Length: 72
Image 1 (cartoon, rainbow, N blue to C red):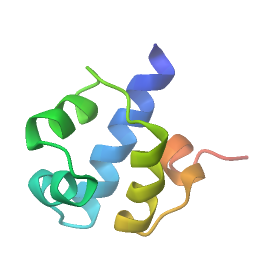
Image 2 (cartoon, rainbow, N blue to C red; image 1 turned 45 degrees about the vertical axis):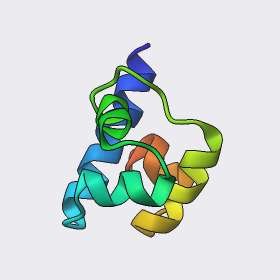
Image 3 (cartoon, one colour; image 1 turned 90 degrees about the vertical axis):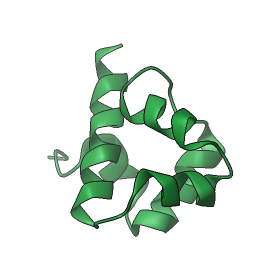
Image 4 (spheres, rainbow, N blue to C red; image 1 turned 135 degrees about the horizontal axis):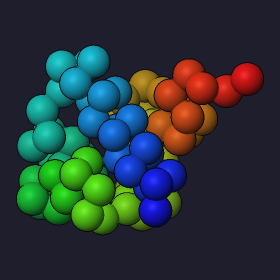
């Protein structure tokens, strides 16, 4: 469960660093803004198809989403 919160927090940080609104991300993922908010707040885990789209939207790798620079 702790790893899930790290991933959710990484998504929020990456989005905020790029100045992107939750609503925009939700539209790109074809989900509701409330659903995406639940992902960032740790109440839901993103589906694999969403993670793949998120890496393109945010211009990052899956490693950055999962580890955000913590790879040794």
